[in-house]
Each structure stands twice: as C-alpha cells, then as structure tokens.
Length: 311
Image (tube, rainbow, N blue to C red):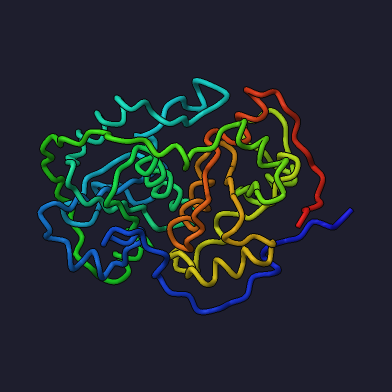
C-alpha cells in the first residue's frame, strides 16, 4: 500500500500570472481588477457580488460601485437543515426568475465577485459561474482576487445600493457536460483515462474530519485528493494555467484525461472545475453535484479511509 501523498509537499513557489485559457468569446473567464476598472461604466455590465452569510465584510458596508448582491445560496436548493443532500442546482424556471431579478439581460456581461478575504470565499464565485455555465449563459467571468483584491488596491468602493431593473434573460440551452452524476462517477472509476478529483481538505479525504450532513467519514474509493485551496496564490488569485498544469502533472493528470471534480456537497468541487476548465484549459472537466453527500445518503455506498492514492 502506498503512503498518503500530501500535495502541499509537492508544490513549488513559482511566479504565477492571472491569465488562463480563454473561451472563443472576447471575454476571458477570469478577469483582472484592471480589466474591471476599465469596463466599470459599460452599459451592459452586471457586477454580481456573491457573498456568504458568514463573511466579515457585508455588502452594505462596501462593494464595487454599481454591483448587485447575491447570496452564495441564491442559485441552490435543499439546504442542510432540510435534507441530507444539500445544495442542488435550481430548476430552469427558478434560475431564470433569480437571474432576471438581478437585472441580467440576454446581452449582459456578468462579472462574478467573491469577498476575497479567505480561500473559502472563492467557491461562492465558482459555484455561481458553474451554475451559469450549466444553464448556457455566455459572457460570464470571475474577478480574480475578488473584492478583497479590489479593496487592497485602493479602488473605488460604494455603499450605495444600486436600483435594479428586471432583466429579460431566458435560458436557451443547457450544457449537461459540466454536470456529473452518480452514473458518470461509477463509469469514471472503471475507466483508466478518467480521474475522480476530490477537492476537499485532506482531513475530510482521509476521514479524520467530516461534515455534519455526511454520516460517515472518508472518500470515494479510487478518488484522488487535491484540495481546492491549492489552486490559489497567497493573494487569493488563481495560479497560472502553466502552474496548474504542472501541479496536475504531479498527479499524472493531463488534458487528455476526463476529470470529475467532487467535494462534500458540490461547492469546492467547482473551484477545481473552474481552475481546470476555465483557467488551465482542461476541456473534459465536469463537477459531481451533491458529491459525497449523494454517494452516501442517496446511493447508500461506503467511503474509504485507505490513505493510498493510485497515480
């Protein structure tokens, strides 16, 4: 049996830039604070600040001028107090209703901003971006470094709450390839060209800690651990595409692999999804919504505490 491999021990301190793989669209999936400052007055721009209820900087206390607020759970259903499998995708109808209330139109450019204070904040932005991607929304981007970087740079901050006009956005297509389910996971575990990438912290992976809504500790047998926080630099910007590819190569993961990211309930999994798919250009990446909570609560399958990682 191989010993558990700590990814942190493999990481090297290298310089990293912000620019990642871009889509065919003129809008990068990851934009800088400089880019946003230059486009702040664009008429079709919607700055969507997505913050959790636990962040120390609340939206009314300061935000990017013109931004609108969205809770990190706006685009999710089934909270832990209601079900053992929390944070599902909303229905198409619910998604359209919420997006329109935020003033988003069919031709809007949406920049998603997280609080940018601690690494955990990033999942608020990436989960939202992943949901928007699933519902076929184009011209969306994440602000690299979030509000925290914007504030540290001394850029303008407002306490004014913007008046929002109801938008007209309508879903015209679904992108099912970004969403993985239980059947996809089982197929991936049997395929040598597929990787199941567990995005949780190491202690959750090896089973010394667990979340309350997951009755047993451990990881899905055959999965590989890569904590989502490792995708970020010290200033909470994303690592460069080159650096991400290098660190994946240490796990024998390359762009030829089909990758399914997962976590406890599908939140942190989207950070790895975004980093791989949108920043580093790994174009066969999906995220397992509900993740380990679905595996144990819905599928009634066991988890492993085996510390071996198969590379």
